[in-house]
Length: 217
Image (tube, rainbow, N blue to C red):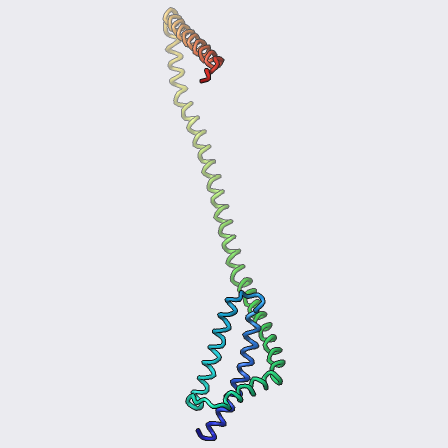
């Protein structure tokens, strides 16, 4: 390994150590360990460390084809320590500002979508439904009115048609001999009396049946 390759390896590992510190703080900031279940935190930690190991090895492979030396670990530790001492406070402040910015941007986008897309579509749908209900109500009222008019016309037509027939029958009745009309009236009164008699008997039977106690087993 030449001196230039060793120098690039040192610089890259120092940078990876600092990057590891930044990613660790970012991971801790978004993980919220106290609010997560232990098994979920355990799985996330394993995935995080595997990803960090693979990224460091990939950079090392690009720089010196994956040759591992003792000073590589020293360079990683120096980069991580330098981040903790010099860059961490600035990075955390920048991270919080970025989080607040993206949250504000997201809320602004949601409000824009709600005000310019969701609300107009909502009011258009409400307007359409209101118009449809109003038109439907109007059609029902018109149909009911037409039914009433038709029913009145039918009643008037029935009266108009049956009135001459009734007048003719009444005239014929008046022309008939009195002895014949009297016999018809007597027959009618007799039939009415029979009907009333049977009705009274049936009513008595029903009343007796209601008053009769039901035998209990």
